[in-house]
Image (cartoon, rainbow, N blue to C red; front, side):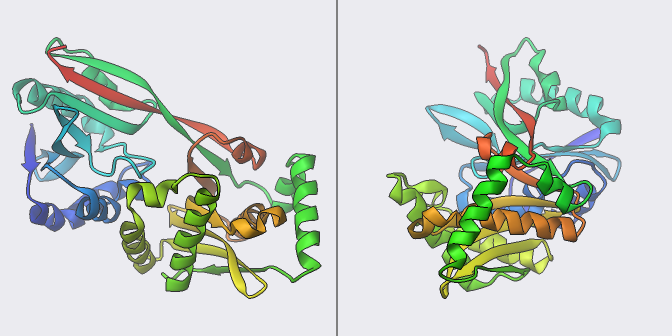
Length: 330
């Protein structure tokens, strides 16, 4: 006896956040990017068009939540997931026991609702139950691979983990640190608060690094500096922030902003001073951060989106993702 509610007002969605959070706590494989804290902050900075959040219930119990908005894109009325663009995991929360019924009800809703032309849903799990929507006469469906994520599982001790890394990686890191210590000893720090100095350094170093290579970088390209400051403060208030940094010669030279959730560290954004690129402070900070993660008994270090080769040198394994595009009448 499933029912469907549609939340179209921002204040109503904000009031729904506590119940939304409780529902997600009962589901496996949830990440920080699917939490109301993240998605509501994203909506307040980047949201446009008409909010369209689908809430499925079995009586008073939530069965699924699909947080979307409808907006104009390329001349089409598009349904997009809240969080798209700068979020790495956007799988909607669907309770397994109700999955079949939820997907059938969602399919019927989409068939009857003529206010959309395209549904474009990205950063989904490779085995997302939303693939069930692909079988429908009223709209065409395209399921295709999306940008992979990567994760390193932190089993055993750090010494064995480091011994198992490629010889070239270990040699280069040793040389970087030896060269740096002829000038000054890099100082590694971990804090859990939204330190304004570290936030400023993260934004400035990230921008400077990409500008050196003739590109704008994610923060500038997405105009996300204000969003970043707010979400860091929100996650810090929930003890979900882990800020790693290296200081050298009196200045911050490398920063990683990571989010702790369910004993996993999600490395969201990192930056290093391009003036010290030859000293490899980005790699050195990752080394210290992973060693700290082992010491604190985290289960894994999630590198998030991207299959850059360096991640796999650090023991990462790929996490496949998919994107679903539904087109009405195609």
